[in-house]
Length: 425
Image 1 (cartoon, one colour):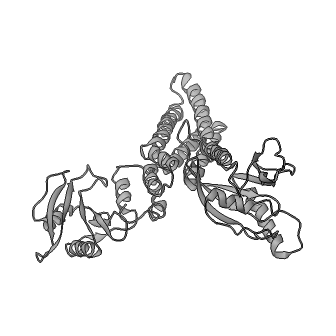
Image 2 (cartoon, rainbow, N blue to C red):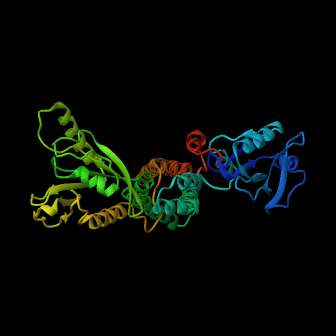
Image 3 (cartoon, one colour):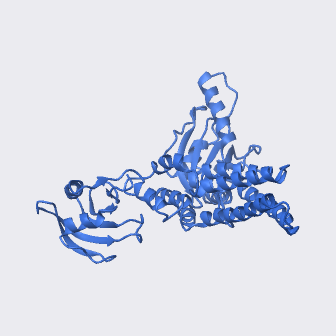
């Protein structure tokens, strides 16, 4: 499959003024020449009339010839900037198939870029995250990873592990040689330092993963304190039914908002109280479960009531004249009073939960699993009874790091990873 020449529409689906079609593979030059009649100069947009093998005109547009290895995929490639009608795209696609190309599979362009050494797996994953980014914070995190921040960090650890392994192998292979005593001390010290750095990297509060996936804020409180009204006000649309009848909300209702540049799912939960109603009781159970699993709990009370447990306390219905407990924010979902202050508090909390200042954060569960294995192997190496056992632990730690960037043992995850991509990328 890697030797095939592939094509796909890289722009969005549906009718548009301009559509971009990509071509990559060993026959790209021949196919481009066959459609255009004459080759454009490399890396310059050129106007051409595209014709099929029978000479029928397909479209008039711009084409770019991108000879490898200096292309996205590392192969000979081309791009067509066509009119975005379905008939145009269908005609050009049919002409390419007739010339021997085939439609690309999801993520195949980026997969080829990885296989041709144009990027490591962390950068490939960042491409997907950048396409899926909903907010500025997600975009910044994905770009940082695409620029190689994570790959550089893990590559540096791998280089240090290789040196450690070489030193350890020397101690094993030449036990009778008069090796400097500092070699053993250097191995022990560097091993401890590496173990500490990787452990600290893992202990990041899942900030990168939280930003990538989005946070969950549960809105809790007893019936009729205005939880649903508050969720509607924060979402600026009617998400939940609002009623004066206690127990109206039976199930958890979700809505997506952006707070502090972070995507947040607000969960409106059932009112917390003891009840003999079987359905409402199940709603209360689910509300408690969602609160326990949430990244943050917004506890809503009615102004004048006592404070309640929660990460952020909102005293609603201040228009009725009730007092606001210390540490709470007085709000009124009906009039909008205090909502800006509440949004600001929630935005600050969202940023604090996802703050990625300092070293690049972990963004993928598979990275975390591999690093946890590396930490376990480094810990084992520190207490190994025999030098051969220490060397084996170092080798396994190095292998775990290699699986993150794709330098070793990743064949079994490639299909899963790139299947998430859109076609054309």
